[in-house]
Image (cartoon, rainbow, N blue to C red; front, side, top):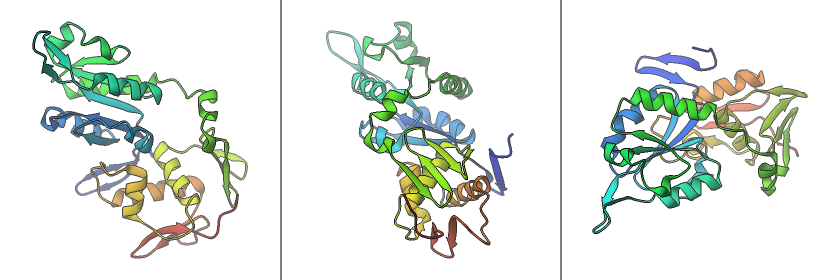
Length: 259
């Protein structure tokens, strides 16, 4: 396991540098519990929802969506799949790939036509098989189009803090002119700091802003990611240049930011 993937061990398990975000939608959580546990154990941030809400896609920015498409009875026309059209339409609009979990009967007919464009997997099945498929889908996911990125007004801006420069359009970070490779979570964390007003940010507020309300983890995951981010920025907790620890409260920027 890479050094930047495994940050530290605790007696209750391993805390990872979580780099991939998955939204898992199922009206029956017990059906997908094994998959949720497997994903969490493989260093995924998992947002588990009972019902799909399109507005959460831009808020949580998942890299992949897993949809448990339970068939529902439709008198006179067999079975249909609930909510598939809305979910696929929203996911396609945001460029988020979708893995649809189907029972064997629905999979035999390759599901409803409304799921065209999504990848399909029989469920329940081995969660490791689903994990392998998800990793493959993420590896094959195309990079965002520069044209699509430029369509958002905020993406055209840059923000600087001391010798750190963040390019919103390219989602890149440079320090002293040298590019720094950050994970998506580290990037979001740094962005939240430099777009704040310099006030103290509690661990709870950082969890909500970066990981979202559906994150199943303790506030110590914030400390782990701050440690990883500092290491990449060549910052020090003892003599901080960028991020200051406020004991008993949280973190803040070392001083005022500039554009």
